[in-house]
Image (cartoon, rainbow, N blue to C red; front, side, top):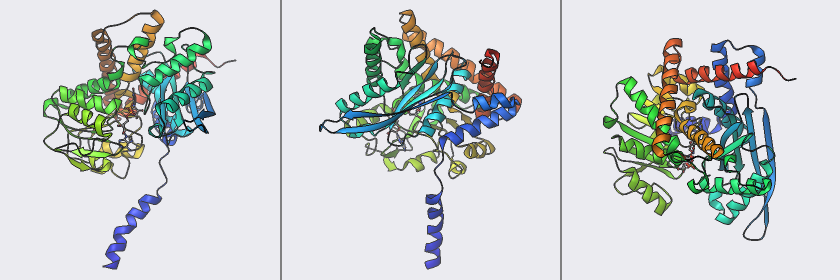
Amino acid sequence: MTVTAMEGIRPMATEQLAPPINAWDVAQQQFDLAAEHLHLAPGLRKVLREPKRELTVHFPVKMDSGSVEVFTGYRVQHNLSRGPAKGGIRYHQNVTLDEVKALAMWMTWKCAVVGIPFGGGKGGVIVDPKKLSIREVEGLTRRYATEISIIIGPEKDIPAPDVNTNSQTMAWIMDTYSMHVGYTSPAVVTGKPIPLGGSEGRNEATAQGAVYTLMDAARHLGMELPKCRVAVQGFGNAGAIAAQLMAASGSKIIAVSDSTGAIYRPEGFDPNAVLSWKQEHNSVCGFPGTKDISNEELLELDCDILIPAALENQITARNAGRIQARLIGEAANGPTTPEADEILYKNGKFLIPDILCNAGGVTVSYFEWVQDLDRDFWSIDHVNEKLRAIMTKAFASTLDMSLKEKVNMRTAAYMLAVQRVADATSVRGLYP
Ligand code: NAD
């Protein structure tokens, strides 16, 4: 009895002791693999392997109680060879400089894989915004925007929403920046509310782009979306809208989750009703007719399509072998580690990598920036038609590369993207 109990405990203890996975290590490993396949020159490898700029700011915010708290934030610009930096701002208690560096590097490749003229950037603040009042979040946002204003601007670096930030956050940043420069500058951020120069379709763009790639992948694999059962991890901008769009295309949503847990019903449920439930109860859990399960269980469910749409390092060497979905669409950034990639590929899983799958967000952000600079407004049909064309072309090029080079879809997307950035970097030459 005692031995059995100890044996039961041992693996858990080992897992708990496993060092946390560092997103920057993952990003560099992914880059190294592509650089190796491309036989990239050693000098270029050194340049592309590191970010160009890393800004760390510590800034005070007056809290509702009258006390002053000091917060830490970052803005990283990875590579600017193909255009100004572009990338979201994340508010989360676990933000680290290494995480922001990884996210900035991923943005460089993402912009290149869909062929839009931006480099990669990313920002983050170490904070759990759910513990702050709206007024405190506004104060934090305006002061953080002021601190990073030395490197952002419509021609320099254009932030957008990410985890726990939204169109209101972007409105505050746009207003703060505009107050500093003395004129209204809509093009300094994207993902703004429509009345401030936001674009039709931006709110849904990340999910819409992911669904376009899932449709193309399903066609390639001979899967029929109306017969597919889908599990979605994360129920925010990317995840909830992806669930709604997949349901609209006929798929059955059988599980969704948020940071509080997951819900499951093998017969499927209406994600629109879950969204209303979450708005009322601050959690997807407890939605009538579903069973509460854990986020780990959701990933391993018997389903056809899995959409990770939360945070990094969710599919690792530990659970990759138990993933049952045939098709995985990474709406989140960095949800799969390199070891897990290998296991999934060996097991015949088809994975649409983050830099391709969720590139719809930055693509419509690019449309928003163009509309702001041109003082123009496009219709939703025009936005989605252009988005569809870009996503379909990027998917087809990645699939071709994957089949030609016999590499998985991530390495194929990296090879396309890294080559484009390497070409731009080398043709510009080395200054001075
Ligand atoms: P969000 O804040 O709108 O939603 C995040 C969701 O994930 C929330 O439902 C939250 O409860 C859930 N979550 C947090 N921790 C979790 C955990 N441990 N397990 C399960 N769920 C958890 O953020 P978002 O904008 O939807 O971003 C989600 C992912 O998509 C991130 O990786 C982000 O970088 C990526 N992404 C977002 C955009 C965009 O335009 N918003 C674009 C490209 C990529």
